[in-house]
Length: 105
Length: 216
Image: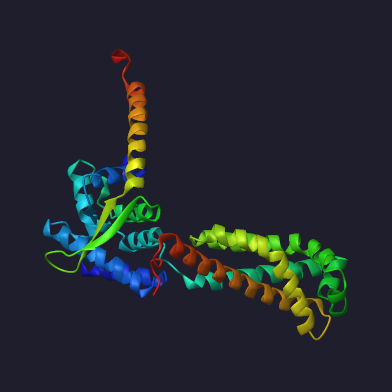
């Protein structure tokens, strides 16, 4: 449930180090503990980001089978990711304060 | 994996996704499913329990659905609602302008601005509202754009339809004239919707510098 609103920014963060294809992104997020992406939800999310001009795609030959489609975060995506990071820091800090138990405040 | 891919292909076909776009989607999906399978992740786990819903959402997000029946559906909805409105007006209200609007002798010579300024709000609004609700119900990606274009173009389209109906109709019968106008306006709605689709594809091509996904 939580991931639904944050999937796009998590995918952008996963792409920040370098281009990935679909399953690699799913695996990276799952390995990080975000298991809720195992329902193909990254594909519509990546499609929306591509149409929004935040990522670019290209095909690259793979060792076995036809060329794979890779996604790469572009400048616009990087700028948005930085913005979202800042917003998340502010938001998560505020939520943490609110959720603290009375004796921890 | 084969079953999941087959379900996705069937869904994309139903949505009017072009063969090229289907091949593109299938290629990406098949490659990733193969990679997942190497890690012991089966296809239905990877795309979720409802492959058809996954395929639908993905194609919508990619903007490659064409759903030709949405265009025809607009025409059918427009025809039914416009005919209903016109017949209801004739049976229940019988405003003077209605018989003038469809009457053979008067509609051509009377001030068209006066006539359709009265008819347009009563006739056009229910029809466009019905078309908008239909497009929203089928989750058409161009619903808003279609409605905006139709709102702008409908008064003129209605006037043109009335002129054509007046010339085509051999009698001054209100119901027959209403049927003719309803069918012509439905055809105009279909043309408007098809135009919105074509323009959307062209602007996508110009903006991205490449053919929009789904173009043969």
